[in-house]
Image (spheres, rainbow, N blue to C red):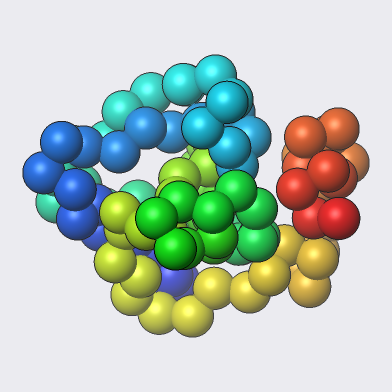
Amino acid sequence: MKPYATVTSKNGLNERQYPSTDSSVLGTLKYHDQVGLRCKVRAQNIAGDDVWFLLRDKQAWISAKYAALTGTVSYCKDIQPTPLTYSPGAAEAMG
């Protein structure tokens, strides 16, 4: 089973260009929406949680603080590279 997240925030959850609240909002997920996940990174700390997920079907990030994980998601540095892997924002997020 591929990992996915369910939005837990009643206010919804912003999809971001990079794993940071300073990054552009690309879209918004609604409460209880489910999205596939590609990988995770440690980045900006959101209320005690510094994990961010990269969506599987869209080049966007969501904070794990407001998403319940189902399954297991690997760190981005441990998965096969894609063109997104080498984008400036992704490279910065992965350290």
